[in-house]
Length: 422
Image (cartoon, rainbow, N blue to C red):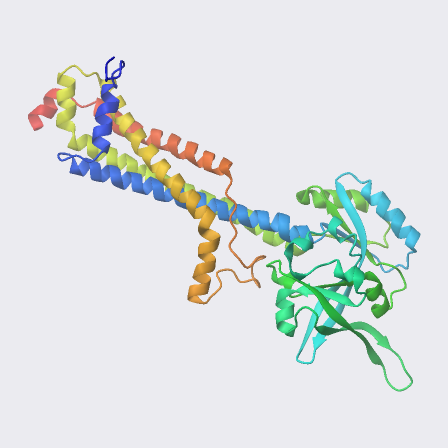
């Protein structure tokens, strides 16, 4: 049995492989091939990594921030009875696109310790129903939401707020309400001491520093509410359809209800992220285009350097199509090598960029993302293989197009003129 393959390697592919590989007599060609491969690999790695970061921002905002913030909020100052609230909730849950609806009390108050005072938004919740409209349980770093059901005067707050107040799990803080107690001598603020039952960290300044949760009955007592609740939180099946669903709900409600959606608080940030993703993606594809242009230059220089070889091949009987295929193969091999290296580096970069950013922040002593400006204070990453496949196919197609001009120039070389020039 022969040790050699029955089917010989095509001459264009064989010569193209020699041109791409390092050889003693083709240092210029090998160097230009290496430059072209490095350019493609670097642009692909950057493109995949940045796309993963933008996907990470989109995922964090959709699943985490918008998993805590209600998609639609209804509120009213009317003193509705418990039965009226339950009927309204049942009607809302029948609405198409609505996943769940739960009552709550949204109030403004002040949280204070002897050394610090902070205005906050206070949500009076039913801890047993909270999981239906919020994923806050996933972000608890101390204690849990269930403690609010056991401790009427418990409070759950964000880590940033806890650090500002200088409190931890089990410590006491005072909540001052906007209700004023009138006595014969002077008006007195209404306040109550609460015990810290849980601390969460979402990574969003507006939530970690400005939101606290208390038991619904405690909120009703402290703020002297005349009604069991003053609002309803609605979670939708599709967060991007919240505006459309809100319009449908609005047509079934009276004027006594005020309505808002998550876009009022985070809509501008989300649109900016999507817009930035489009612009950055376009710029990175232009970077890939520059790398493809580098491939064109590399192949043209190869054609000039190998004019004598082309003339000899033509003299030995090689057709213009054979010469054209030779340089098409060379361009394809360079593209494949660049894609393989670039995808490897891009995948590694996408998986490690969050840890690398955290290490840089720790080493340099500054934050890459300021929570007061961005919706999250860390660099997220979400590698999607469909993006990788799109990049691979797009770069390979662009590279094949880039080889057409040099390949045609090589096929047009006239043997006699080329040999006289040698």
